Image (tube, rainbow, N blue to C red; front, top):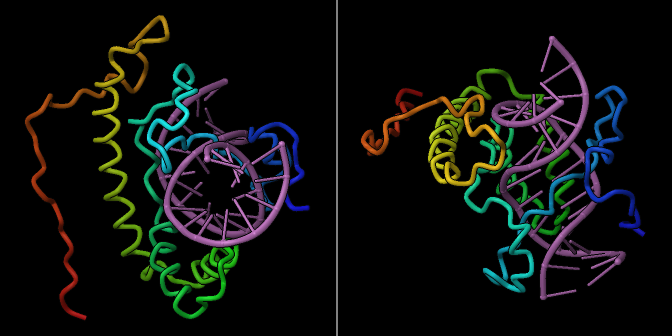
Length: 164
DNA sequence: CAACTGATTGTTCCT
DNA sequence: AGGAACAATCAGTTG
């Protein structure tokens, strides 16, 4: 009884499409892009429709960073609860309850992830440079040129939380 | 067996 | 400039 949605696959239609973004229920999308886990190649049936295994995933927002930690704690207090929605709701509620100061550390981490994501995108672009589907490989943000392979950020972990 | 679902908000991407 | 889609999670459920 739960999954009889049928409907389109997971397109934006699921998002209720039009309609103020007030009603949460973003709907459901995504999902059709795993293909790994159990068997690397597994059935290897989608060789043609292969997606971008190298495509970097979007950087987790401050909320997600907070959720990652929140989830861990939530499980400790609710080891029986296995509903992802439960943590989501609880986390969302708490998140709104937090002040900017509390979110600051999470935002900072999220910001770092974003920077990393940009780098990953560049590397990904280089890989895709061969696969120019569109007529013009010179897309828009493709111009973002970066040193080929020189600047190797050794480790820029700048976490300064001393006094407390 | 594998893909999809729920639920949260934020960020990123495309039009 | 705004809307649409996806980011983690995890077990359950459907095809």
